[in-house]
Image (cartoon, rainbow, N blue to C red):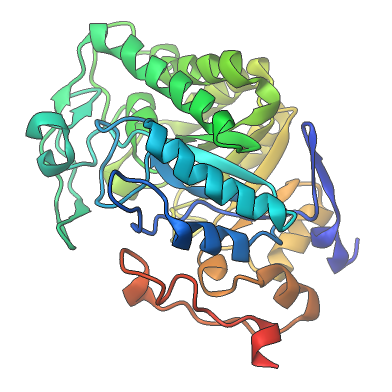
Length: 362
């Protein structure tokens, strides 16, 4: 196949994507008071609407689910109204957009938690890692283990967040099951030392991720539900002693639910693709929906993987931060803007909505 493969339309459930480029979720810490996305956020996503599919930054399903300052939520009426302005802008420009639903689990700080309580986790094991609070990176707070009686409430929060997403005009949702956050913490044995129905065996550790996916599917439909996983990333101090059978089992469960896509971080998030051995083809074979490949993709590698049938869609992250017109730049073989890392987290328009397009540069 030719390089044009990346620019071909793709039918994703009931929607047709203009091309096979996906904008990956990217935390930008620019929510307004009440963790509401504002006009600047609508402009940011609107600028990037030429992507086949936009996936928003991770958005907490509850206050308890928040782990970083100024990240948007999807649990209040005001947040839903703010996101409606974003989806309207993206749709006006011909784009399609999913929201990523997030609970950080132990990757949080008491300053962000209800009543300044401890963050929650499958087990009371502190992460060696930082979070962004008060304009700086600080150590995460030690978590407490969730009580068995609390787990249904968290599943209900995901369900409600999915309903809110549809009310806000999103084309669908992506469940964040990756990068060392709550669902990943339950799945992996480095963080899950429970001895109840959510710990021990692979089936038990996979349970919460699958129960959340089932609840979301029941609420908004499988055709509007995707999920992101990261089998071998060490992000946020996460690990598993035997990830292949764990994620084969998880994907078997997701396949039964008929989710519309599986979004896989291949390798270490934001790092090497070959940090640990893993057979991603096994996941693709087990899952009938779309496979979104993510992590370190170039235009050439994206086309090679698509041509080989190893993925259906390719997600790009940092390149979309600096290049609102990434699709056009790839299509024309034009040079890319370099991202300004100093403006990744927090701030205003600088490093957010002021990157030049090819058209502006002409």
